[in-house]
Structure formats: structure tokens, C-alpha cells
Length: 433
Image (cartoon, rainbow, N blue to C red):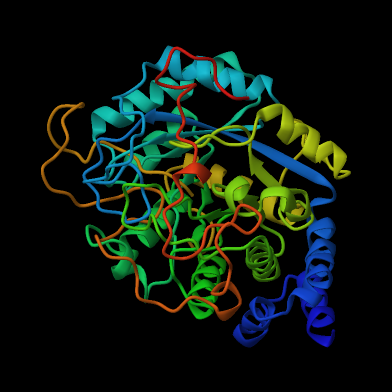
């Protein structure tokens, strides 16, 4: 296809495709799908070879969130039967992180539910970062604590945080249908604060919430403009007890097209195959590694993932290798910019130009374990109202029959396809790593 040849050529030169080209990727047919994956794979291998970076999530504080993010099982009013607990002690969080590092994880992602951290929360997370770094030489630590107040990004950087995650989740036009307690602009500003403090910015999206192809292209183009170093691509996990429990619009083919479009728009960025891959890609997960160069190992914040050993076997069987701690994830041109930004921030200013997956903080109010009566939000994933978004779903996902290869149909609630996490952080059971 002329389209794919053009996109490969642009990706190898780090040139931005047009919106029309990005939309055309999402509109390709199933007969063209392997060609799309192969083309995106050429761009992936140019910048990342056959390496796969492993990331490990530690949920520092689960549930108890004042925000109304529609997709989130930790949201205000959620009836999802998830684990709920207040802040883990630094030593407990460090122990959980060590399990992920032992399983091969290069980065530990510390996440906490809520609108954003108080200064006391930043102190607590700083101690956790220091404990993890002390016990795990060379590990990267990414914090995901929601919306940041002035000076908090700098404090996290000083404590040793290498990166900060705050996802855009969906397009600016659709955002009001997903959450009402904070704005799209709030999220953009937090990503820019992370950049300016010298941390590597991590910001991505959630697909499958009823958005249109145009919405997906809009959010990925916005991410390209913000210039994060990593872009997690999440696929909605429709938890029973949340407003989006019936949003089953994704197929494995649709997921692969979304990943490919993201790769073409962000060719030299760490594209992370994130939450929901097991639910929606299922047996086609190995094919997604041809496009994405990063995954989460083991479980997610409130749901169980594929067994850690199965993740490692999948990577090896597909002909890829786990990225080592002594290898730079980013291509040299991006790694040099990130290092310069970090050095500048250490002198008290700056960052580089421009500006995933889980809620954070304690909302900045009241006692730690108290559930606020009303909310605004700042989780690192999408949030929303009690109504599903009205945006149209792409035509190629609308006719999926119920139960086909484990696929739920739109309008169906399928708790059997979503396993709530009952092990690891916040429990007495060993983690999945």
C-alpha cells in the first residue's frame, strides 16, 4: 500500500504523518491488518530493535477516590468490588517493587488514587522512592499521583523520581463526557510540570470508551505535541459497577490498528502496551509486540493481568528480548535531550520543549482513609460522569457478536472477562511478577 510505504518512510525520518494518514490506518480492513502491523514494526525496530521494556505497577493507595472518572473502578460512587486500602508503608511498597524488579522489570510505577497529592503525601512517596532506589540499584521509578501543585514535581525529582505519569486519556472534545471534576487543560499542565522539573514525562490514552476515530487521532496528535518519552496505550477494562461497564467495542484487530497509528505518529517514543491487553488482544498479544516496545509485567492497579512467567515466555517465543537495566530505552537523540533537561532542572529551572494509568493522591482533604463526599479528580487515567460518552464508535467494531472468541458485545456486562486483583500490594498474598 502506498499509505504504509509513506508512513514507514516518515516514521524512519521522525516526520509527523497527516491527520488523514492517521485516520486511514484506523480505517484499514482486516485483510490489510498484517501489512499494517509489519509497517509499524519496521518503525519500531528502527528505534527500539527487538527489545521489550518491562514496567511494574505498585498501587500505593487503592480506591477512596473523590473523582468521577467514568472508566475507573476507584472512582467516587464505584460499586466495583476492588481492594480498598490507604497508603502502603515505604517498606511494604519497596517489598512489592522488589518482586517486580526480580521478575525483570526495569521501571517501577508508583500509583495512588485521588485528585492529587498533599505535601505530606509527597513526603511519604519521596521516602518510598528512596527506599526502592536504595534496595534496587539502577531501577527507574515513575510516580503517578494525579494533579500536581506548585513545587511538587521538583520535590519528587529531588527524591529520585525519574519519570511522572499523567495520561490525557481521550481527546479534548470528548473529555467532558468522561470526567467532570477536572479539565483536559489540568492534565496537560501536569505533564508540562513534570517536563519542567526534569522528569521524563509519561502520558497516554485509553481506547474503547465510545470515542470516534477522530478522537483517537486527536489525542495521539496532542501527545505528540506534548512530547512525552513514553506513551501508554490502555484499552478500557469495563468493570462491573462503573458507568462504562457495558462499553465492549474493541476487537483484537481494532487494538492493533490503534497501536499502529500511535507508533506512526510517535515513532521514536516508548509505546507501552498497557492495561486491558489481556482482555481485548487476548491470543494476539504477541503480535502487538511488533508495534509496542514496552509492557506492564503482571497485575494492574485493581485488575489481574497475565501471569508474569507467561509475559516472559510470550516475549521470548515472539523473538524479542527483555531490555536490560544497562540499556537506554530511548534512542540516542531523545536520551540526550532528556539528560540535558534533567541537568538543567537540577540547576533550578527548565526542561525540554513541549509537555497511564491510574488514579493518585488523597484529594488534598481530610484524613487518609476518609472517602470525600464530593469530588473533583486527578487520576492518571480517564475519569467521568455517570453517563457513557455519546461519541460514535468506529464502524469496524460495531458488529462484534456476543461471546465470539471471548468477546463481549456492546451493551453487555461481562464480569467474567475482568478479574479483580486480590493479591500483591495491600494483601497478604504474593504479587504476580
